[in-house]
Image (cartoon, rainbow, N blue to C red):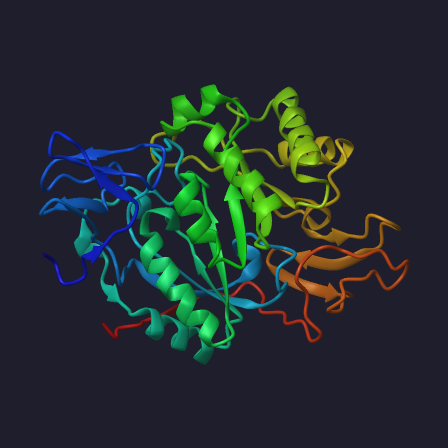
Length: 359
C-alpha cells in the first residue's frame, strides 16, 4: 500500500466479493485494485482506502471572497488547498486539470493535518478551505484537517458540489464551519447530461445544511450560455431557494469561460449575470451576488431594510465594511446574517502560494 493510502470510511462488502463505496450516490462497486469514479477511493486487499490522504495539488492563501463567501469573515485570508479527482464528471469543469487528474505524481505537496493548521495560523489565516476539487472525495483527510484547525481556533470551509449520501454528510458537515455549495443548475436533465449526476442529492444537501446544522451556507451557480441561464430556470431556482431555504441564504451567479469539454461556447455576458441577479432579487432573495465579472453593484452587500451599501467590494478587495460583529446595519439596525468580526480585515485580491512539506 502507498504510504499515503489511508483507511476509508463509508463502504461495505458485497456478496460477490467486491466492495461498495457508500460515500456518494454513485455507489461504486469495486473489485480488487479497482478505483471509484472519483479515482481516489480504491479497493486494496478487500478494503476501501483513500489514496490521496496527506497529498495536495498545492496550497495558497486567498481572500475568503474567492470561495466565494461574502458573509463569512469578510476580508479575511483563507488557506486553500485541494487534492485530485472528483465524483462528478462536469464537461464544463473550470478546474479540470486538478479534478480530472489521474496522475497522482502531480500531488507534490505532502502535509499532515497539523502541518496545514500550523501553516494557516502562521500565515494569519482565519480559516482553511477545502477547494479546487471536491472535498467530499477526500472527506477523511478534510475532517482530520478540520480537527487540527479547530484546536488552533481556525474555521473550516467546504467548497463542494454537495453530492454525497446522508450518513457521511452528517459526519462531514459536523466539522465544517461554512460551505459554498455549487448548485450547477435547476434541472435534472442538466445534471445527467453535463455532470453525469442527479439534482436531488444536491438539493438534499442544501436542505440538510440549512435546517439541521449550524454550518454557514452560501450557494453558487455558474451560468453557462444556453444551458442553465434561461429566465424560467433562474426564476424556478430562486423561488426554490427562497421557499425551501429562506431569503437570507446568499446566492452567487458566476460567469462561465470556455474550458475542458465545452470550449465551443462563448463566455457568459455580464448582462446575463445582471439579469439573473434581478430575477433572484425579485423572487425575494436578499443577498444576490455576481462573480467572475467586474460588477460593483453585484459585489456589494446591501442592507435589505434601507438599501444602504454595507460591504463595498471591488473584485475581491473590500473598499468599505460598515458591519460590526453583531451584523447590524448602522443606519437602520437591520441584522445582516453571517459571521462578522469586530476588526474586519481587507486582504484584497492577492494570491500567495505556500509550500508545506511535513509528511
